[in-house]
Amino acid sequence: MPDLDTIVNLCKRRGFVFPSSEIYGGFGGFWDYGPLGAELKRNIKDAWWRATVQERDDVVGLDASIVMSPRIWEASGHVATFTDPLVDCRQCKRRSRTDELKDAKCPYCGGVVGEARNFNLMFKTFIGPVEEEAAVAYLRPETAQAIFANFKNVLNASRRKLPFGIAQIGKAFRNEITPGKFIFRDREFDQMELEYFVKPAESRAAHEQWVQARIDWYVRYGIRRENLSLFHQPKEELAHYSDATTDILYKFPFGDEELEGIANRTDFDLTEHAKHSGEELTYFDDETNERYVPHVIEPSAGVDRSLLAFLLDAYDEEPDKDGTRVVLRLHPTLAPVKVAVLPLSKKDTLTPLARSIACALRKQWSVQYDETQAIGRRYRRQDEIGTPLCVTVDFDSLEDKRVTVRDRDSMTQERVPIADLVPILREKLGAL
Ligand code: ATP
View (tube, rainbow, N blue to C red):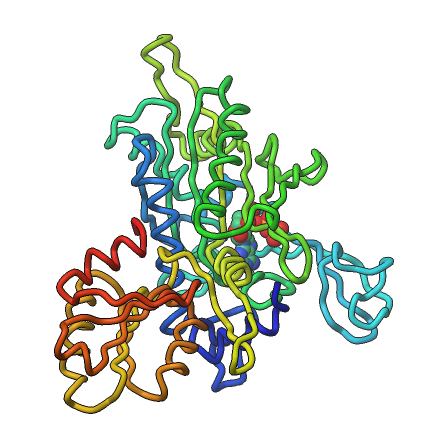
């Protein structure tokens, strides 16, 4: 596995991820996704949505507002308890979370630290022109609460029966004390969350099923199973809402760290929102003629962390005649560019045909057209960004109406008729 710097450099050089506000010296904990990163991120979200919503008949989607009534965060417990204990070093003045201390000393300089105080991780803002306490609102620190707040709306509108889920992808914000490890811990990030409502007696089994389903998803899109592990949070570490939480950890270069948490949130959230809002957030079970509060299983994944894991797992270096070939073996579904169209020469005898092929393929896939440099270097550039297939147009193509399709992983080349290109590429890329 590459070290983190290798991936950070690749991301910067090839346009996956840039430090936010870089021309002003950067802005800690914030990142910008460049042309390739934006595609990769979208593809990850789409792959999650496909597996979690589209391929199932028991999950529906939601896209709620980021800023919501502050009463939501009072009910959920975030105003009171979404805090990290924070200490200041008396010597170097840097801040740390207490779980980062080394032998109760500052992790940076070994200095003595002051008293711990609780620091709420929610970003505050004001709604309307007056900056007063009554106008305070929060940027959501998780997408989940909007799902609970809409439970009744979705239930009424979609007429679902238990078990059913509501899924959402969107931005979340946390004023992390120590952001870092590239895009692993950010102050602004994307979450992919599902709240899966079940009959109380079925929550344990559903929890286990979702842990397995989520492992399967990572493996389906290219993460090696041996790089994933499970961590069952001990009772004393559980969040205030959770009865049991299993984390899926990934073997990052800086250690085995959380990629996703799958929590059994019981009936905590619906019960609290019912209490605080005065609305009845229950479910009528017409099989048993009972009304009750469903329990909920929550697989909560971070887009940025999985993007980092997909890049790390895909990265490969292998010796070749010019030194080293760097290749991102990304799953074709995730690859930011699916096909590169490369005319062997930039002479205008060849380029019109190559451009017309690129133009036709763009209707199906994201395509890069590149006529610069020697062909070998162009293949290497595509390998490095994970493009699964290259289509090379040469002078014979003008006569025989055939082009060469080159495979990223095996580097094998196959000559195929231009007329059959779309079905052949589709077959090679697999079902996207
Ligand atoms: P950690 O213990 O690493 O802070 P957490 O347990 O607080 O994470 P959850 O509240 O369970 O995280 O959030 C669910 C998912 O959201 C995490 O598994 C992670 O993928 C993502 N996530 C949480 N915080 C961040 C962050 N600051 N930056 C990027 N992704 C994050």
